[in-house]
Image 1 (tube, helix red, strand yellow):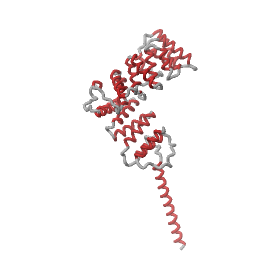
Image 2 (cartoon, rainbow, N blue to C red; image 1 turned 180 degrees about the vertical axis):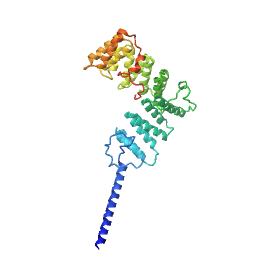
Image 3 (cartoon, one colour; image 1 turned 45 degrees about the vertical axis):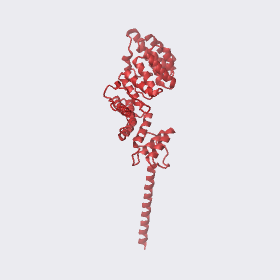
Image 4 (cartoon, rainbow, N blue to C red; image 1 turned 120 degrees about the horizontal axis):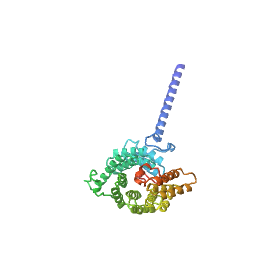
Length: 363
């Protein structure tokens, strides 16, 4: 009898342990379904969302909707979480949209490698999507991958031209001998990106042609206006550069690049006080004075250069090393060197405040 009771007690204990472990496994699975995957390769937010008590979405579409709602409330970490959760469902019907939205958030954050990864996965699912191809090209341009960017942007533009009935449009031919058709649903960023590449290749007239075509669809496009003004500056068309940059700063007074472009245009025209007014909108006065002195030096106007660099040093509340360095150089050049051409030194002097990378497509 005693042995029977011991066996029964052991069986009961085993049953309780088994039931307990099963219960733990069940609870753990439930939590995992609701838990944020903070180690996902496309998630870079903070693991402090506190979402484990929330009911999980029933399908990918609902997860996307939740992500959109989070994004609209400026909670991009939560939006990323929901978009990544949309990818966990067996049905991949909305996977390309999820990857695209993930890429867009990373692009806004400046995480261009992650943005490229997400955009590329979206494009692999939907190869004929114009916006996906355009987005890959834009982030590749920001990453400095100019050749790859050009291929993707041309691919997006070719699909856009074919969409509008130009089935014979061939990017292998002279791109600018064929009129580009751009409408309200064209990916303007792709066209503007191609314009930037043209400016990088010193093909300023074709670049301006693209920006003007984009402005034909949206005459207030901040990106097109900003890059057009800079393209005119690079091309030496100071009159048009001033007109476009002044228009841009009027429409978008917080556009730092446009104010800097306007300042550079005034410096090139030797309108230094106008340049000081423009540059002071986006940087401290001593930095603006230093930049004017620096570029005046590059133009061979050493007298003005020394004047503005000395003003920069006197204006700065602390010892302004950069202005001191530029002043010594200007004084030395004034004595012994011929006039310095801007194009000769630009490439090796990219650290000056007003020199913006031409590949900056944020505006």
